[in-house]
Length: 391
Image 1 (cartoon, rainbow, N blue to C red):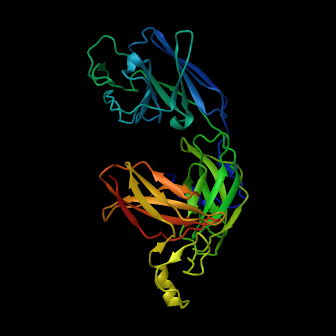
Image 2: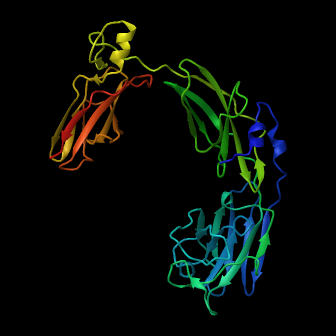
Image 3: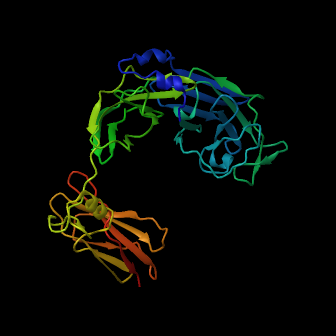
């Protein structure tokens, strides 16, 4: 998470953020020689999200290429054939070097092997796993006295030291990401959720969320395409903006401004209807139905009953009868184990009159409860709980 306070302070509507990003470099295409072996490093330019590493080696079964991804000898990616690595993928190692190449079970999923036809070994590595300056070291484990085990924990390995024979590539670069689009805000009881479409070049992109009238960002580091802000006052109006950025190689890459604002109202929590005045499918309150404020609070604190809610275990399954719903309503079905501290979790949302729970075990007892979801997304308090044992 980005915690640099100057980054948060830099955000204000209408500011020219492009001044914070350094000038982009040109493309990089370097071939490094290690004895009779070579590796070609290609960055097609700042708009590219990956860097390609192509190894041309005389002994593919025993040669490994180490890429220092931080430029500080603190972590590296190891590339090579499955025979050389002892595993089927590139390996990411965060152990400070020159410790031994001991494989601990973590393969690296962001190095994609590229199919070649000329006998070379090629990988594309995402830039968010690299740095503007990287070091490379190529070693062959054939011959000599090994110092420790290899990545498979069985074959011989070698210690790694980029200071001894390593070579450096500089000038890898990115451009500022494009701004996200289609920012929308949806109000729910006591909360507002933002949704947006990330830019096409979203690798390594994070977002600050800025609210009108609030001096500092309400969130400094959001990923993905949605964010929810809770504990808001019912009926309060909030307008949010997004600012996309990459913080890479100790440098900030960001677009020139915030997105247009999206506004929503934090909705009030729904008040369940009382017995006798509820529409078909609505909630019925167990207890008093007077309109006195204190009595209404007392009723709301009790469990609710949905008419037609029944559970029955048969054939190793639980069949749940659901109440009749009004147009636009739906039912969220929740289940827990029958222990006192067990927590309920959603297993399904349905508009039908019944649901069959097949993910239960014989000779176990379960508890079920329902939540009514209104057409506007409002949610009731949980219903009364029904318990059943599966035989």
